[in-house]
Image (cartoon, rainbow, N blue to C red; front, side):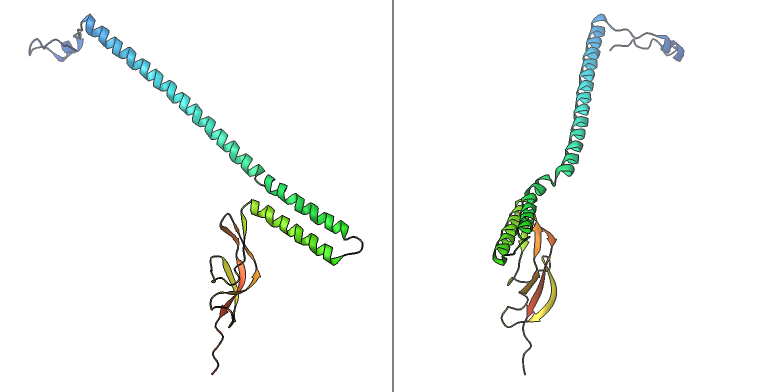
Length: 186
């Protein structure tokens, strides 16, 4: 851009404000083309922004809906696996209505227990039965310490109640009796 040089030191500030900036037609066309390109690029970026914003909003809504559905239906598969266990227990009770054959009743309960254990395993539940293992306070709850010459000190001598892990996270610690060396006789 070219501006006319100041004509003299005597020109007043008011005269300078009234003076015109002169540009050639070629410079004007170049400036107009640059402005048009900048406006087109700004419009393009605005449209990209609006599209990205709409896409993010849709993703947020879809994620929110997925989380709600996950909460709503999380237990559906679990209960689907447990229903046959319930059915087996109900059939066992119905069969035991008359005379009870203890051997058959025991067999039915054992099969139902296996069915329940398999259903729970499918969902990541794992039994903690640490008999003979070193006592681990992160997975075991010591109910008492018992003297034992048959078990190593600080190992689980007896399991009072099994513990459970769900996907490697402790749900319930195993309640145990911990072995200690018997007192020395003098």
